[in-house]
Each structure stands twice: as C-alpha cells, then as structure tokens.
Image 1 (spheres, rainbow, N blue to C red):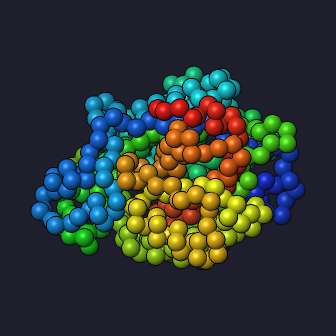
Image 2 (image 1 turned 120 degrees about the vertical axis):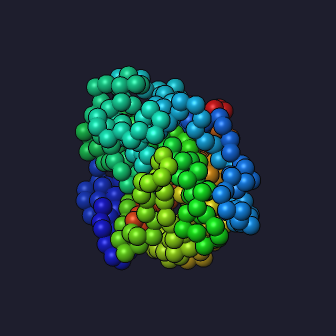
Length: 373
C-alpha cells in the first residue's frame, strides 16, 4: 500500500506485487454472505424527520429510495456474525477450516451504541461461528475495509500460508443519518451524505483455487492523501453515536479524475481490457455519482464492461465497507453472474483510498450462492 500525494499504485496481480515471480497458489472467491436488517426507512420518511423543514428532494438527488436500518437488538457485531454464518452456509468449508478471520467494520458497536475496541471484533466473530482456532485481527480502512481484507487474505493464500480465510464486516451507521437529520438545513450541508447511509453485514470466504483454476487476478490500492480531509467523522457531543462531514462534490471530482487512471493500471497488470469485464461493482454512494463516474471511466478507457454497472444504493443506501459484497450477493442471488464471468470491484473510501479487485467467478460460487436470502 502506498500513501502518496499523487496517484501511485501498489499493485498485486497473480504473481504478487508487480515484477515478482508468479505465486504458486491462486486465491478465489468461494462464497459470499450478507445480512440485511428487515426494517426499512424510506427517504421520504427520513426527510420528514429533519428538524429544519428543508425542500431538499434527496431521492431525486441521490436515487436512494430506502435503506435498511437496525432495529431491536441488532448492531455492528450481530450483523457481522449473521453475515458470516450466511457465508458459511453457502460454503463447502466448515468453520474449523477457516484459518484467518479479518473484521473490517468502521462501526464497531456491540451491545447498542457501545464501541468495541478490545478484544477486537474479529475474535468475537470467529468464536461465534466456531472458527476459534483462526488467526483473527481487525482492519480499519474506511469504506475500503473489506477490499483491504481481501488484499490481506489473498496475499496469505498466494504465499501458501493459509488455504482458506474469511473477510467480514457489520456496519451499523444509520445513526449518522439520524444525527444529521437534526442539523441539515440545505443542499450545501456537509452532513447531507449521511442521509444516504444504511446498515448491513457482509462476509466473503476466499480459498485456494484448484490446480489450473482461475480466481483473483488483481488486487491494488492507492491512497491520495491530499484528499484526506474531504470526509471526517467525530463523536456527537449531544446525541448517541457520531456525525460525519463530507465535501461530496469534491470527493466525486477526485474519484472521476483518478479512477480511470488506476483502473487502466489494474487492467494492464491483469492483461485485460475493460470490454473483458462482465460486471463492475463500484462503491455505492449515489445513483447519479455512480453513473457519472462510470461514463467518465468508459470514455477514458475507450470501451465499457459487458453489462451495465451494478447499482444497489437505491434500495439499501450506502452501507460503507459492506457495499461491494452486499451487491455481489444480490447479483449472485438474482442469477445475473455466471461461471467464467469477470468481476471488477472498485472501492472508494475517505482518504482518498481507491482499491480495485479483479476476479473470475467459478462454478461453485454460482451454484452455492444462487438462491435468495
């Protein structure tokens, strides 16, 4: 991983970091699980709860119609554990075969709005699913958390250190939206983006592909640190939870400028063109931002993926570090992903962190993950 003031990538392809000898093991995406809280909050209901009667049409502006929110006893921990259990139920591996558990939540609420710091969430999740012998640790990298976990687990699989690992996250972040509703006055508010957030859990198991099999072809990250103050979070002094302040337009401009360059590097490293990609799953911020960003990337790359960009933010909101695997699970359950398809996961996170994962789908992933939740 490189921290830079201009776009510079630290890359990993089938052979590990660029220039190294090809690794002897190929990691693959083996199963995907998710947990969506049953309670729904529409954008109309959320905007009706704002303290200041704004005339903001948030649904038209962002495309978010509704989001799932925690109700009752759910929290970050329970969402993560439920997603991990769902992932295992779709896997050929038992919990005793999981050799590493990486927890990547931004929110770490356990027992309501109590932040869990030590022992880390990864240990609790591993214990809850019966993977008590797994090496467990937490990673914090904003909304790129789960993709960062994928980077770490795939690297260990490539090196032959482990055969199977899980990356998991539970995000209870709707409280940011509830807190923002007390302060947003206009479309210029830096808390407006908080009103797009939703809660979810997600998990992915990665393992060693069979001899000659295909799997993860590239993982790469870049941190463009001059954008680090465009999104900041702080504890709320007057209400439970936190508040988030985002310069959304500036973040969008930075992403549109930098993603095409980095996606080109990723495709080149994997020996691919954008037309070789079947499904592009970006971070789910808003419908308008996603489509504008993809148009810009396609123009820069001189082509397009074989299918329209995947959008789930309209139904689930921005679920932070879980968004890519919530969306991938959606595509698998709907039967839109087939064996042999290539998938590009494009992560965007405060920092500004840009991550790209390219992988080929195998038959087992489709067969075991193709039914409804």
